[in-house]
Image (cartoon, rainbow, N blue to C red; front, side, top):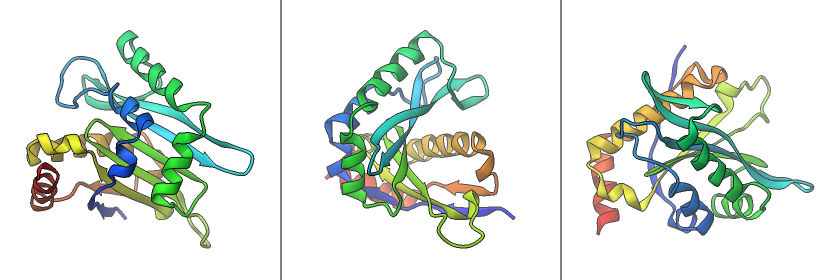
Length: 194
Protein backbone atom coordinates (compact mmCIF):
# COMPACT_ATOMS: atom_id res chain seq x y z
CA UNK A 1 0.00 0.00 0.00
CA UNK A 2 1.37 3.42 -1.00
CA UNK A 3 1.90 5.83 1.88
CA UNK A 4 1.71 9.51 0.92
CA UNK A 5 3.62 12.01 3.05
CA UNK A 6 2.47 15.60 2.59
CA UNK A 7 5.39 17.86 3.40
CA UNK A 8 5.12 21.25 5.10
CA UNK A 9 7.51 24.04 4.18
CA UNK A 10 9.82 25.31 6.95
CA UNK A 11 12.40 28.09 6.89
CA UNK A 12 15.45 27.36 9.05
CA UNK A 13 17.75 30.24 8.16
CA UNK A 14 20.07 29.55 11.09
CA UNK A 15 21.05 26.38 9.21
CA UNK A 16 20.72 27.32 5.54
CA UNK A 17 22.82 30.47 5.89
CA UNK A 18 25.79 28.66 7.47
CA UNK A 19 29.01 28.81 5.48
CA UNK A 20 29.25 25.07 4.77
CA UNK A 21 25.63 25.00 3.62
CA UNK A 22 26.10 27.96 1.31
CA UNK A 23 29.20 26.34 -0.18
CA UNK A 24 27.15 23.24 -1.00
CA UNK A 25 24.29 25.24 -2.55
CA UNK A 26 26.75 27.32 -4.61
CA UNK A 27 27.74 24.15 -6.53
CA UNK A 28 24.18 23.25 -7.50
CA UNK A 29 22.36 24.22 -10.68
CA UNK A 30 18.71 24.94 -11.37
CA UNK A 31 16.57 21.81 -11.93
CA UNK A 32 14.85 23.68 -14.80
CA UNK A 33 18.14 23.78 -16.75
CA UNK A 34 18.53 21.29 -19.56
CA UNK A 35 22.27 20.79 -19.83
CA UNK A 36 24.15 18.35 -17.66
CA UNK A 37 24.76 19.73 -14.18
CA UNK A 38 24.78 18.72 -10.56
CA UNK A 39 21.34 19.64 -9.25
CA UNK A 40 21.36 18.13 -5.77
CA UNK A 41 23.44 16.14 -3.33
CA UNK A 42 22.55 13.71 -0.55
CA UNK A 43 24.82 14.18 2.48
CA UNK A 44 24.91 11.84 5.49
CA UNK A 45 25.67 13.45 8.86
CA UNK A 46 26.78 11.36 11.84
CA UNK A 47 26.92 12.56 15.44
CA UNK A 48 28.38 9.64 17.37
CA UNK A 49 30.83 9.48 20.29
CA UNK A 50 33.66 8.27 18.08
CA UNK A 51 32.50 9.59 14.72
CA UNK A 52 31.20 13.07 14.11
CA UNK A 53 31.38 13.63 10.37
CA UNK A 54 29.51 14.36 7.18
CA UNK A 55 29.99 12.86 3.74
CA UNK A 56 28.38 13.19 0.34
CA UNK A 57 26.61 9.96 -0.65
CA UNK A 58 25.04 10.58 -4.07
CA UNK A 59 24.44 13.35 -6.56
CA UNK A 60 21.30 14.24 -8.50
CA UNK A 61 21.79 15.21 -12.14
CA UNK A 62 19.80 15.92 -15.28
CA UNK A 63 19.66 12.97 -17.64
CA UNK A 64 17.46 12.34 -20.67
CA UNK A 65 14.78 10.76 -18.47
CA UNK A 66 14.81 13.61 -15.92
CA UNK A 67 16.56 13.99 -12.58
CA UNK A 68 18.51 10.88 -11.63
CA UNK A 69 20.47 9.92 -8.51
CA UNK A 70 23.96 8.72 -9.36
CA UNK A 71 27.57 8.33 -8.26
CA UNK A 72 28.77 8.38 -11.88
CA UNK A 73 29.26 11.89 -13.15
CA UNK A 74 30.53 13.66 -16.22
CA UNK A 75 33.40 16.15 -15.86
CA UNK A 76 31.36 19.21 -14.89
CA UNK A 77 29.17 17.29 -12.46
CA UNK A 78 32.16 15.52 -10.91
CA UNK A 79 33.97 18.79 -10.18
CA UNK A 80 30.94 20.22 -8.39
CA UNK A 81 30.38 17.00 -6.44
CA UNK A 82 34.05 16.81 -5.43
CA UNK A 83 33.98 20.42 -4.18
CA UNK A 84 30.94 19.63 -2.04
CA UNK A 85 32.46 16.44 -0.65
CA UNK A 86 35.70 18.29 0.15
CA UNK A 87 33.73 20.99 1.99
CA UNK A 88 31.82 18.57 4.22
CA UNK A 89 33.98 15.43 4.56
CA UNK A 90 36.47 15.31 7.38
CA UNK A 91 34.95 18.22 9.25
CA UNK A 92 32.65 17.84 12.22
CA UNK A 93 30.99 21.25 11.82
CA UNK A 94 28.25 20.31 9.31
CA UNK A 95 27.05 17.38 11.43
CA UNK A 96 27.27 19.34 14.69
CA UNK A 97 25.47 22.38 13.31
CA UNK A 98 22.71 20.27 11.76
CA UNK A 99 22.10 18.28 14.95
CA UNK A 100 22.25 21.38 17.14
CA UNK A 101 19.82 23.31 14.92
CA UNK A 102 17.24 20.60 14.17
CA UNK A 103 17.76 18.25 17.14
CA UNK A 104 16.90 15.08 15.18
CA UNK A 105 16.10 12.01 17.29
CA UNK A 106 18.83 9.89 15.69
CA UNK A 107 22.61 10.00 15.49
CA UNK A 108 22.46 9.87 11.68
CA UNK A 109 20.47 12.32 9.59
CA UNK A 110 20.72 13.11 5.89
CA UNK A 111 20.31 16.32 3.97
CA UNK A 112 19.16 16.05 0.37
CA UNK A 113 20.12 19.58 -0.71
CA UNK A 114 18.91 21.24 -3.90
CA UNK A 115 19.46 24.87 -4.79
CA UNK A 116 16.20 26.22 -3.33
CA UNK A 117 15.14 23.56 -0.82
CA UNK A 118 16.41 20.73 1.36
CA UNK A 119 14.80 17.47 2.39
CA UNK A 120 16.18 16.47 5.79
CA UNK A 121 15.45 12.84 6.62
CA UNK A 122 16.22 10.12 9.11
CA UNK A 123 14.76 6.78 10.14
CA UNK A 124 13.25 5.99 13.53
CA UNK A 125 13.84 2.24 13.81
CA UNK A 126 13.26 2.10 17.57
CA UNK A 127 9.76 0.59 17.47
CA UNK A 128 9.09 -3.16 16.92
CA UNK A 129 8.62 -4.26 13.32
CA UNK A 130 9.91 -0.99 11.90
CA UNK A 131 11.03 -1.00 8.28
CA UNK A 132 12.82 1.80 6.44
CA UNK A 133 9.54 2.63 4.75
CA UNK A 134 7.52 2.87 7.97
CA UNK A 135 10.34 4.55 9.93
CA UNK A 136 11.06 7.28 7.35
CA UNK A 137 10.94 10.81 8.84
CA UNK A 138 11.24 13.69 6.31
CA UNK A 139 11.39 17.43 6.99
CA UNK A 140 11.33 20.09 4.25
CA UNK A 141 13.35 23.31 4.49
CA UNK A 142 13.01 26.20 2.03
CA UNK A 143 16.06 28.30 1.24
CA UNK A 144 15.82 32.07 0.95
CA UNK A 145 16.50 31.76 -2.79
CA UNK A 146 13.10 30.09 -3.18
CA UNK A 147 11.54 33.54 -2.75
CA UNK A 148 12.72 34.42 -6.28
CA UNK A 149 10.77 31.54 -7.86
CA UNK A 150 7.18 31.21 -8.94
CA UNK A 151 5.33 28.78 -6.69
CA UNK A 152 4.60 26.58 -9.75
CA UNK A 153 8.32 26.30 -10.60
CA UNK A 154 9.30 25.59 -7.01
CA UNK A 155 6.63 22.89 -6.82
CA UNK A 156 7.85 21.24 -10.04
CA UNK A 157 11.48 21.36 -8.86
CA UNK A 158 10.52 19.72 -5.58
CA UNK A 159 8.37 17.08 -7.26
CA UNK A 160 11.18 16.13 -9.66
CA UNK A 161 13.74 15.99 -6.84
CA UNK A 162 11.52 13.93 -4.51
CA UNK A 163 10.56 11.51 -7.30
CA UNK A 164 14.24 10.96 -8.16
CA UNK A 165 15.08 10.41 -4.49
CA UNK A 166 12.32 7.80 -4.00
CA UNK A 167 13.18 6.07 -7.30
CA UNK A 168 16.80 5.71 -6.12
CA UNK A 169 15.77 4.14 -2.79
CA UNK A 170 14.17 0.72 -3.23
CA UNK A 171 13.38 0.57 0.50
CA UNK A 172 11.15 3.65 0.11
CA UNK A 173 9.17 2.34 -2.86
CA UNK A 174 5.99 2.32 -0.76
CA UNK A 175 6.26 6.07 -0.08
CA UNK A 176 5.13 9.05 -2.10
CA UNK A 177 6.44 12.49 -1.10
CA UNK A 178 4.11 15.37 -1.87
CA UNK A 179 5.44 18.91 -2.07
CA UNK A 180 3.42 21.57 -0.24
CA UNK A 181 0.39 22.83 -2.14
CA UNK A 182 0.35 26.04 -4.18
CA UNK A 183 -1.33 28.10 -1.46
CA UNK A 184 1.30 27.13 1.13
CA UNK A 185 4.17 27.73 -1.30
CA UNK A 186 2.81 31.13 -2.34
CA UNK A 187 2.46 32.10 1.32
CA UNK A 188 5.99 30.90 2.13
CA UNK A 189 7.44 32.75 -0.86
CA UNK A 190 5.61 35.95 0.12
CA UNK A 191 6.86 35.66 3.71
CA UNK A 192 10.47 35.12 2.58
CA UNK A 193 10.29 37.97 0.09
CA UNK A 194 8.99 40.41 2.75
